[in-house]
Amino acid sequence: MKKSNALVLELLICICVFALVGCKASAVVEGTTKKPLPTETQIEQEQTDETSEQVEELTLEDLLGEDYIDLITETITMNMENRMDKTPEVQYYPIVEQAPVTDYVTIDADLPFEINENGDVVITFAAGTLTDEAQGEQRFILPRMYY
View (cartoon, rainbow, N blue to C red):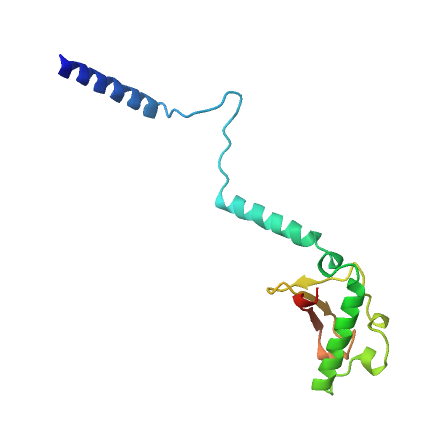
């Protein structure tokens, strides 16, 4: 009799397992609906959108502080002087004419910038803005250690 009770119990367990698997039973909370899982492409797009929003929100003032205009002006002036010392044939207008950089370019909240792979702010001016056009666009890096 003990064997038959054990067999009946095993049989009932098997029936329950098959019933659950056959019905694809799942625990669903009442009032909720199942949403499909996002695809890898959707996840990557969401991450890209979040990263873009974070980068777009950063301003020069956020990165460099409230004195960002002075910091940018001083750094660019110093870079132009150093470049002219190393390569005298390159002449930067503000240095040659002993004029402020701001006489040639506008440095304000609308100044476009990038952040390079080291986390440094990079500001690029069009060819012919600070030196003759043949020198091409001029890039100035504000190393992260300065802010």
